[in-house]
Amino acid sequence: MKILKSQLFRFIFYLACIVAVFNLTRSIISVINKRDVVRQTEEMRLEAQRENDELRRKLAESQTAEFIERQARNKLGLVKEGETVVIIEKPEAGANQLGVALEANWRLWWRLFF
Image (tube, rainbow, N blue to C red):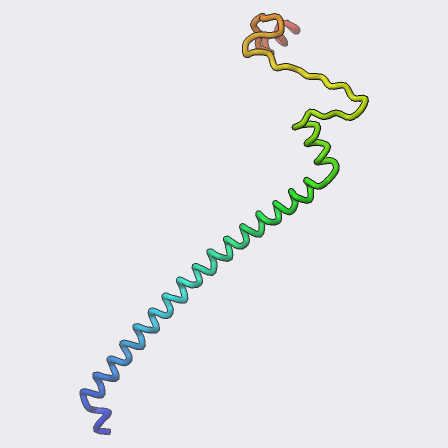
């Protein structure tokens, strides 16, 4: 009993309690930081999963016959046998095919009805 009442024992006991509280606080902070890292990593994984799903969908779509035909028509200018190709050139800005200045569409409609 005398040892429990000694100042040295109290000092060591209080010091041990302070060290324990300090270590416990550090551990709690470490767990909180690790939770944030896990949450961020999970968000990155979900984003990568969504991107992967989108790429898989595009891959499956690109392997269809309709996609290949559409790409051949649009990008390569290919046509099926018996089809006629019509090429429409864009007129230069401000002029039509005859070199006459273009009139605003609303004015043409105005003249048509009034």
